[in-house]
Structure formats: C-alpha cells, structure tokens
Image 1 (cartoon, rainbow, N blue to C red):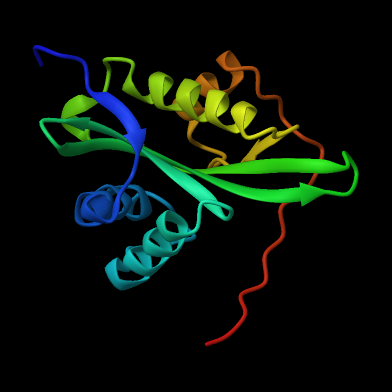
Image 2 (image 1 turned 135 degrees about the vertical axis):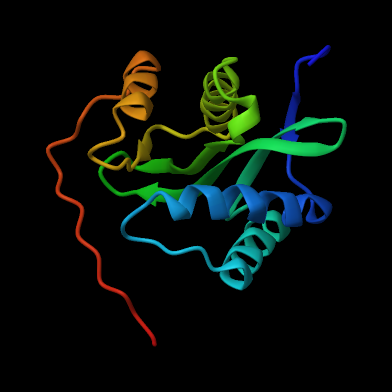
Length: 153
C-alpha cells in the first residue's frame, strides 16, 4: 500500500464492508456465528446514535480494511462515562502492518476525548496475539467473570 489507511468515523456507506469484516471476526469465535442482517442492524444503530457509540473504520481507497466499535455507558463505581471496545478486526491482507494497533490507539484517544474514565474489552481466551496487543496498550486482566444471558428468541 502506497499510503497508510486513514482512520475515521464509520458512515452508513461503510456498513456493507464492515459486515464483511464482522463475518471474518465472528467466524473465528466459538460464541458467535456470522449473521449479516444482525450486523447491519447493530452497525446502523451505533452509527445513527453517537450517544450510544462510535465505529472507527480504517479505509484505503474507500475500502474498509479494519474496524473497532466503542460503546458508551455510565459507571456508578466511577461516577461517570465509560466505554466498552468491541469488534476489533483487520482484513487478512492488511494484517501485520500495525493497523490493529493504530485502530486501538485511535479508539483509546476517541474514548478519552469523550470523557470516558475506563475502557473494558473482552477477548477470546486463546487469542494470545490480541491479548498481547491489549497489554501493550495498557489493558490488564480483570478479576471479574463474564456471564451472559441471551434475551429474546
């Protein structure tokens, strides 16, 4: 690539390419299966409501090569805004050039600019490459246990 991909806020026009990236991500995770319609709905909801969150996208020639989602909430323990990072994924052909690190750094800076006091993320237990990245960026393993209950269906 002659120029480094630019990173910015996702727009509705990015949704098809972002869904392709999410399909790659979810096909690697044991707890999720790719569902394009669900991904489209979720991305559209985040992009339409900046108070809910932001999706950052790395683009080269308008083609999405990577993404990360930032979802906002309030912590009663900290008394202010916090964020959860989700969906960090880089297209296979763009991996190994630091794009995941750049996306993470942009997400951290973006959350900080929004006044967030803490960032939380989940990662698969066997995804040691991602865990190395997160530790390099200052994330530490929490003593909290993740539990989930699906609603609906």
